[in-house]
Image (cartoon, rainbow, N blue to C red; front, side, top):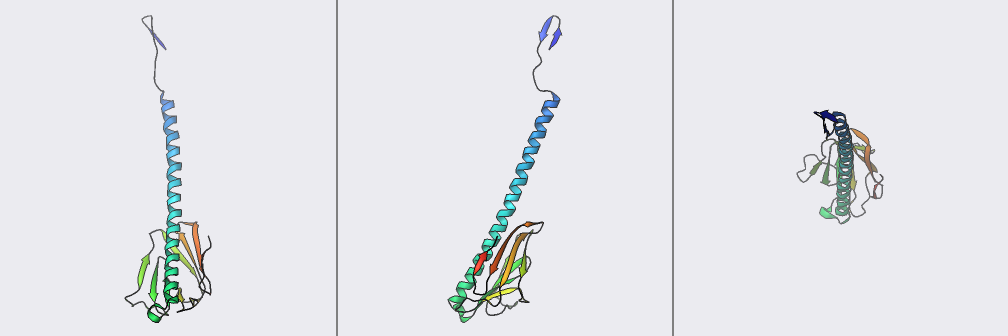
Length: 160
């Protein structure tokens, strides 16, 4: 309030401090929302990649059990991609191979005794040549991961 020529003038509005506090609160809320969204997107991407791998494994198993092409069917895993193939062994030069590349920032970690990092489902029985564990994860955040396992009898499970 100010007194000019015996008239009371009332000041209205926000002070600079009040405005800065509101801006700071909005910045904090925006930061929290952005971080939450990016974490949610990363978790969803790991789930999508895992689901795609499980689908490819199930498809290879079904093709092997049905005897498609009279051969086994398998998947070769690399750190940033996986390749579906026909036959009892992976052949790099086979033109029927289908390569599935992972989105940038995501990777696969393979645990198996097979030196080729592949799993092959046997024709008719669907058994595998070797048990395998595939960990799908975010490269910069290893805690954001899913683990897929394939047992000796061809059972496919998502562990996490």
